[in-house]
Length: 92
Image (cartoon, rainbow, N blue to C red):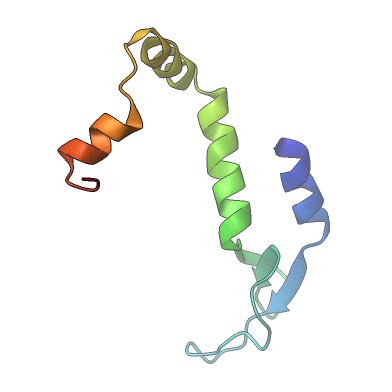
């Protein structure tokens, strides 16, 4: 996960912000994009949805609470999907 994120940062685009506050990007957001001002100073970073999701997932995996929740979940009894669907009225 982290190596994927590093690869995405390596392919980042740099977009220079103009003085017009309503300026739109002239390209689709398909990779990490660094926003810089006219002096080349970083003002922000835009992440495509898939990169953002990978980042969040990596942070969750690093959290010991996440693994504790998984451990607790694995110890609870399983409920068949057919029973859940029936209770929700999704099957006959």
